[in-house]
Image 1 (tube, helix red, strand yellow):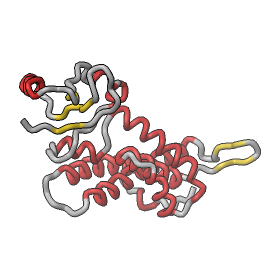
Image 2: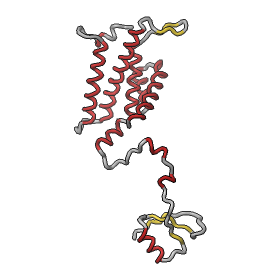
Image 3: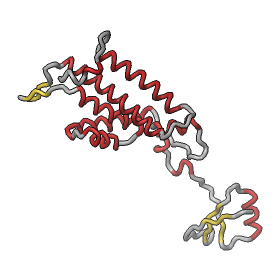
Image 4: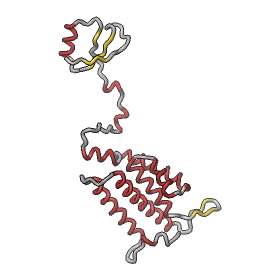
Amino acid sequence: RDQTSAGHWNHPSTNIYVTLVLFIINNFWMAAICNTLPIPAGDTSIVDGVSVLTTGAAFGRLVGECMAAWFPNGVKTGDTIQKIIPGGYAVVGAAALSGSVTRTISTAVIVFEVTGQISHVLPAVIAVLLSNAVANFFQPSFFDSIINLKRLPYLPDIASAGSWSVYVEDIMVSQVSCIYFVSTFKELKEMLETSKHRTYPLVDSPGMIVGFSAVLVDY
């Protein structure tokens, strides 16, 4: 392990593990405040992206440093000894946390383009997929959470995961009021007075339905 690259994390009165933990905690709550304050601060996605990438990279670096401490001589796979590189864990951590927050897979590609390390493609993609799956189980994405928090009235409601198990027959109307070609004005007037719908299907006859035509009636 190259000690020079980790020198900026060291401090005379502490070690790299404490420094990384403090950085993660401080960056987390400051990013949460920055992204939720009702103050115009430019593009929120840029602020969120930078803070999430750095937090994820720090957490991945912390895991990498722990792995390097536990396996100082590397991990032996067959006849080859693979050295533990904490920087690689930082790259994977940045992609995983950013992907879980934004619910996107493209963060793995962004990390590849920024670092130029094609060797981390497989672990980063696996980490992004797993982080997305775990995050979807607990919480909506960052942008959906902001929409719910701000209660924006002009956006549609965000469907919950339970809506995928709802069938059409659970919400459809079984007793449909129809307009027939042979309907009289009296029947049409009674139907409009007793029904709360504003759109009715137009059919050929009560006994033979050939097709439907939506008729908007403003009575």
